[in-house]
Image 1 (tube, rainbow, N blue to C red):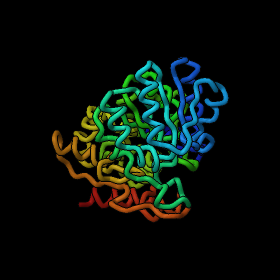
Image 2: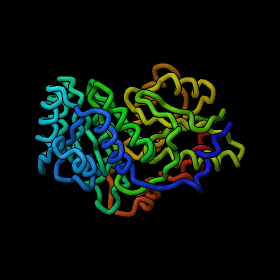
Image 3: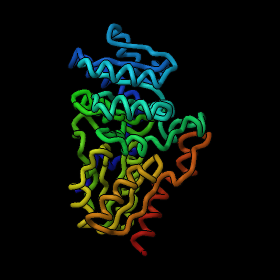
Image 4: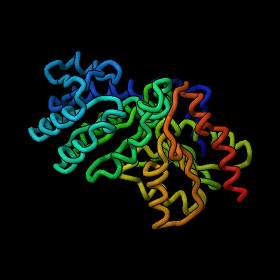
Length: 321
């Protein structure tokens, strides 16, 4: 049965995912006095300011020094704290990947890297700030958890969940507003994927800002007589292989869609899974070996073919082939 709320995109709200992180971090701080926050001179932009105002003695401003940001956080984690570090994803993990690898992942310290302003929703800031490689960069690191929330409500839940997780973690956030399709009652758990709209003809696997696009496309496809199953996969690592394989055994065809590089991202990890356990036709939608550019989020999504309209056309092509 179709979830009427999730498919009713005309009544969705809109909010940046980073807003949900800000709320979730305050709640995580209320839940445990071991939660601390560190920022690299972007307190307001990354929405870490609410935590800094409420818990000033648990907040560290390191300045424009992203390598120091994660190194200090690793030391704090070693002493029993639960550090959240915040910067633009272009700078963290973009600038300090080696320090994340060596001081955090190699030592398996539970530092949470929050990469804000990731992807095309960074808009007019252009290619230098529209980091599209971050999911791939973080997924290859041993011990690292990678979460790409679908909206601000889920970003809040993911922040709280990461605070309770004893592994290193990466949380990917967007700058501009995107649809809010989930509610407080929608489940979220690290390592789980969710069937947001069941179907039998085709599996669409999405995360981040693209899950709302997938749901909108599924509604259009349903009117075309195509029953698409939409899987929301916020946990890129660890991956919920069981949910994906169960769906694909039924549908035999897959489209992945993500607002990131398909190489090493969601499309990459799904293809790795299916090539080993269940080879089927797969089309990966996302950024295909290109950099970003300046423009509004909607202009950029249309330019890179990441719209419900393009997803519908892709689904028809896959089913007709």
